[in-house]
Length: 586
Image 1 (tube, helix red, strand yellow):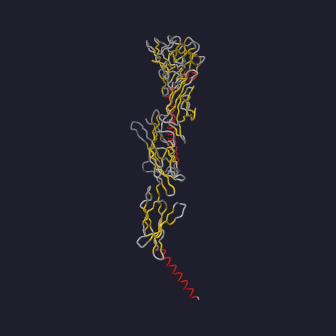
Image 2 (image 1 turned 180 degrees about the vertical axis):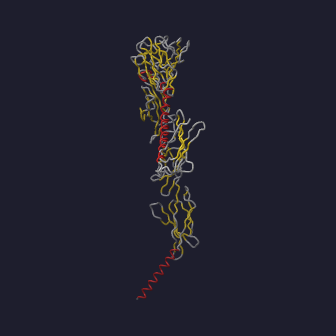
Image 3 (image 1 turned 30 degrees about the horizontal axis):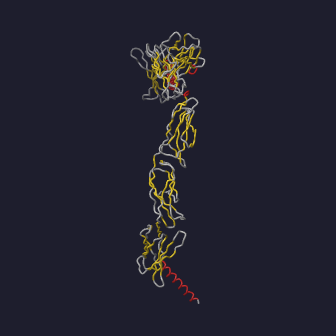
């Protein structure tokens, strides 16, 4: 019994080994196709083969969709080629012998059938052209195959190409786009190309019918983007040159805005989702007449005998119809500013923006203003002055110290004299157009005292309570201090340095005199006509190092001493003295 069991076990192991060897050598069929897309109304040839063997017949399988199972469509056919006209996933296997021995099933091949359907690409936008950076939605329209759930392919392809019907792109450059549908191994044909033309980002344009707001009225502004549509507009206003631009209207469907306030206006257009914005428009300045400030210029600035003075008044905007009026600036000490007296001949205004003054002799200030076709006046210009260096009895200015140049930190007095008890000193510099002594100095009765700094260079003059202007003085400030101050600064720096050097020399001499290691010395002195010298050196046979110090008085004394090796010898108390027998030379 035991032997029978052992025989059965050996037989089982032998059979398993033989079966494993058969499986390991079992061939696998190979399926190939010349192309994987069946043209509309055509077919594709599939080929099944088993390498390096013959006598096979073939079984063919087709999987109709990804959710279905493979089904046999041909069995035991001797032909290795199969022509198919339906899409799907195909495979095959070979068989031969009796009983039939089958190969492993071949690789799978996806075959797509082309349906006679032509999609169409459309742009989902109600405007054109399309601008660079604008988001655009493309749609693939498929007519036919109703009830089919299509997936979509897009050309050109990219990482973000969707499989949906709509394709949102951010337009960067002009290009051509096409699409097709696919479902259960059925493909539509590619659509015709859609040419998408992309233009550069546009700039809105702002225009105004007029730039001056009439009294109680308004001005109409128009914002547009040329040759395009679908825009809504944002509006901006800058109230003054020193303020920032602010939103005043947002997402307005109409490109027209009526304004009754002056300022600098601009706009931009936006459309789409997300909103694509144009470049901000040009700026348009809108004025209320009373907010317009003319600019007055005078020539020459300094009077010369017999010269005429030309006044020129400039108004922006330079609209037609301005009339110009001219005034003399009269000091008003109660208000720290001026009142204005109209110049002869300008009462009714003039269309010429030039006014000539003849035989001007003394310092004077002037202003101008204009009137437009709305019969409203502009504001007065800022005062401009023509200066005379010659004093006159009604008002004169003197400077102390009286010199052409002044230095930083100097104290300067500006004194006013004339037919008035009230005075103020005025100044114009490159950095400050017009100011009085209360700003830059100390005014005491008729004298203004200033402590000169670098920014005090400018033109100074006096103005009286009776409306008179004195002669003008041009003060120039030098960057360096005055000579006396400069000398004091040099001494302040050099003095301590010299003192430190003297202290170091004295310490050095004191150290030499107190040194315990000096036991030899030489005394050099001139005695009589032969100039004899005495030398005393103890304890060493060689020459000692010599140190000299010189003191100048009525005569010269030199002390020469050498370092002795026996300087600490207690048996010579006389040598404890460092210096001895010093006599002044002749």
